[in-house]
Amino acid sequence: MSTTAYNTASNSASHRGMITVTIMLASILQALDNTIANVALPRMQGSLSATQDQMTWVLTSYIVAAAILTPLTGWLADRYGRKPLFLVSIIGFTLASALCGAAQSLSQIVVFRVLQGAFGAALIPMSQAVLFDTYPREQHGRAMALWGIGVVLGPTLGPMLGGWLTDNYSWRWVFYINVPFGVLAVLGVLTYFPDTQHTKKHFDFLGFAMLGLFVGTLQIMLDRGPLKDWFNSSEIKIEAVVAALAFYLFLTHILTVERPFVRLAMYRDRNFLTGNVLIFVVGIMLFATLALLPPLLQDLLGYSVFQSGVVTAPSGAGTLIAMIVVGRLVGRVDSRLIIGAGLALTALSLWQMTQFSLQMDMSPVIWSGLIRGFGVGIVYVPMAALAFATLQPALRNEGTALFNLTRNVGSSIGISMVQALFVSNTQVAHASLASHVTPFVALSHGVASATGSAAAALNGEVTRQAAMIAYLDDFQLMFIMTLLAIPLLLLVRSTSAARAQPKTVVLE
Image 1 (cartoon, helix red, strand yellow):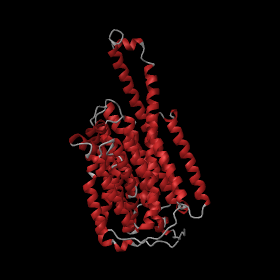
Image 2: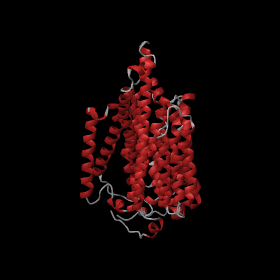
Image 3: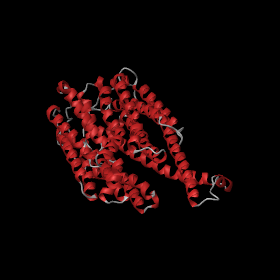
Image 4: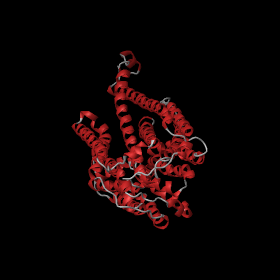
């Protein structure tokens, strides 16, 4: 295959600002929908007369569709060009969002969420690839700072925005809000986006099918596992077997065919490989924390949906500040030092979260969130820039797709992991605490002489304390994982070495 020419940087320099604004709109659109619908589920459940089990498909359908089609993004961009792919993706995502808001039944909204996830799959990877080619190499740090704002702030601000729209208007507005931004993004692409060359590429259907089956089944298993009590459910067992078999067939296939769906040349690049491992860990830390904090604040501390969103918003503010600052440092300071500092700050915030208590006020949540957001923002920018510093431009479309797929899989595994551990640790802690509730303790609480309501109240408090212990155990686990990720930086090439590495051409 002749290598596609990626020379859009010089052609789009005059429109760089508007291209960046359009990219950020598209990134925020997709990233926001990962979390904004979560807080509206109880209202949607009542409106659509659905069970809790059925409502999980509103989230699962979107996640699975996006996960399956994300790896296809690179092939589509190379085959048809980025501009047509962006236009189709944004238009389809916007229309699907409007249909979700207008849905009258559960089956309708699940179908429309599948379409929303399918069309939105290309937005984040292509946003990253376009910014790499729009900005010169010495400004890649700044470009990744802008890209990261949309990717990280969307999920962070989603619960607060979703809660406000649901409380003040209707759950339908968590979908309708996408429409005006989608229209603006379409106009930006039509007016300012440069065309890229494209070439007819071989399509490895079997490789894509096996990868899609693996990712899709894994996502369903991870999303429904907590609800189905994991491997005590036959559904989860079947999904685990299918995912393992599909992954085995995918690996066997790409290692034996001449032109596989995933070009292994990317993973021979040490920076790209290490960057994928780090983004996997960051996906676990960022999204698992976002999944734990709202129920902790709402169920144990009595916060409303909007209040919990406001208290966690400083995390997004810290990320925004960090990305603005670090974007200017990348290229001047060794990126490994910047990433190490960011991981250290993230670990510090997670340690602070292990000190949470049921008697605390808002300040520990706000300060730990601000530090965590600042740490994640410091990590994100140089990590994304370094991961692609030595990767050939011809591999960027495919590389950004796989990079973001790794982040999404990491976030799904992280969320499922902490939820499973929370349930298990709550049961263990409850049993341990209950064993210390002797007749003398019960008598001191008036249980022996009161009705069953007093005993129920005492049991409720034991359950509440056990749940808090389980949350602290999860925060401690993520604290340890963050510390263990720091030595991985020894595998990353320094910025100067990455720039000095000669480029080679990989033929398909």
